[in-house]
Amino acid sequence: MTDKVFSLEEREAVYRAIAERRDMRHFAGGAVAPELLARLLEAAHQAPSVGLMQPWRFIRISDRALRGRIRQLVEEERVRTAEALGERSDEFMKLKVEGINDCAEVLVAALMDGRERHIFGRRTLPEMDMASLSCAIQNLWLASRAEGLGMGWVSLFEPQALADLLGLPVGAKPLAVLCLGPVKEFYPAPMLVLEGWAQPRPLNELLYENYWGVSQ
Image (tube, rainbow, N blue to C red; front, top):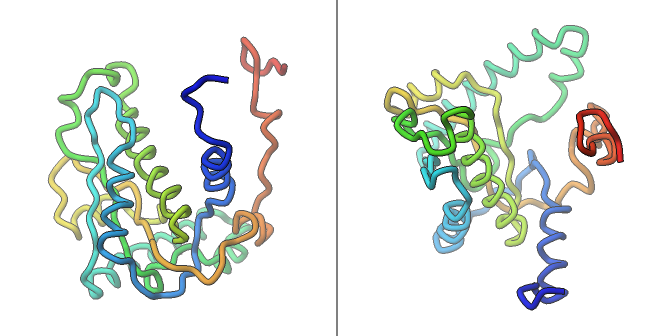
């Protein structure tokens, strides 16, 4: 045991936040205090990023009319996704896929423009900018859960349409519409499991040793 280890209570809290994090779709309205929102965004900003490029940009949507227009973009993509799903389209349309109208805060997480200038860590893997932003979103998610707030990641939208709506510069790309706020309760399991849409696979099926497909 290293002397750098957290206390047992601290370690249990970290693992609890990871285990109880949920992609929330049901919110209870309310508000997020400015100092709490600032603390959550600072946690997101502390995420690792390749080459320290910090590609994340967060846009807080405080205009209710603009929030409604974002929801309309999501609804349009929801219908297109249902059409693409074919025989599961009716089942998909019954799922609640966002809580934009109900949550306390809406944030749009986007990749910055000018990312091609950043070569460190991206010469062969340019998608590491997306990985870095995803780490920031995960930080925000876990910190929110620890603070008792729910968060949901909505990815059902046409990126260019949302970029145009929010005035993003050429080259910038929205990656997520994040719904954040109080919830009545957290789902006991991922919502898609509860709704019978999918089942998670156990870790042992996804863990190999030395070579692809070789189990331990």
